[in-house]
Image 1 (spheres, rainbow, N blue to C red):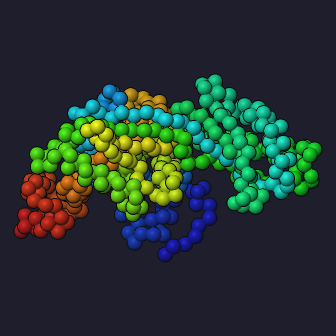
Image 2 (image 1 turned 180 degrees about the vertical axis):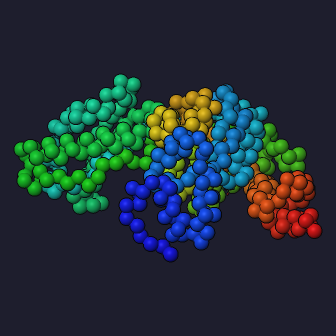
Image 3 (image 1 turned 180 degrees about the horizontal axis):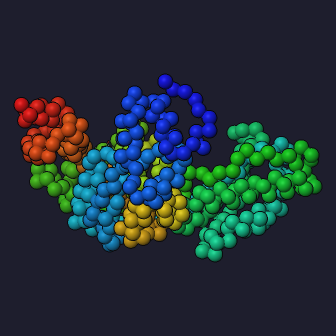
Length: 438
Ligand code: MEV
């Protein structure tokens, strides 16, 4: 039976676990054993994980896989991927190998600007607010110098502050719309700290502005927060090759492959139901690398999907064309990533992943992540438009089914061999396992 509790966060870890298992599990001892199985035997490492969040009771593992052979702008990478879905890493590896033999991936960072906003209410004349803003803008920047000093020294910081009138959409609503360059940091803390300082200065200085009436002086700050919509923090990834080099199947010409592939991309460009799944395939690659490198995948997801709808209809992130006999497949995608700060210096596996990627700058990581997304999308479309997705997917999923039925090592070997030449379905695996056990 569920029940409420107060002061839960103040309990020790073991008392928290006692409460959870006693409240929710018929077999409290079994539940406790499972939770503890996932604790790290290294106490220091466990404490590190405990302290990443609040009310930690155990660790939740995801596999960390690697996809080798990614050639990006003539540099070779092995890309770490943290993901639970079978066949994603295999698909990435296959796509990497395919493009390795065709010149690899080409990437460019188009822009790196991030945005934050102070949302506020002002009841009065816009002209007066504009005069106040012009007067106060240098002080906004000056008052935040303690926060921006180091970032500015390294070449980043505040790029601009704009006053935006949003009253056409909501009564009395205005914004300070601020652009930032945060270099190798994702920048959420930096941006939010700057914004909160702007809000403080803005509100207090309004009280002294002579042109304001008493009512106009009472600016109400609603909130100060970065935006995860980053259409000007954009990276492009591309692959291309002569059309005739595209097909590895002697029964399909490069031309026929390209035509069907482009049809699939075009469908995702015009049909939102398909676009969402198409882009989900892109995000299989993106999220896995974003997670492995300790970045915020929720921020990336939110920003990418907003970008996919920027023209008023949700659409494909990737595009394909043939120009002068050359097949081109590319994607432009917004990615706010960091290679310093946050988890990047804390989580031992994140540090390892970044080292595996030659300790990239944030700009380099944007390019690697975009490539992982494009490769994943290429692999998915290639399967979908040729063999169908289930053949490869179910082969990779076979082990999950075998584990579900607690197959032992020799059963796994026999069944895997059997399915080298037979189609994998859930039922077929159960039947094969039953036949073997009988
Ligand atoms: C499955 O995780 C991803 C795909 O559905 C992507 C796609 O359909 O393009 C295979």
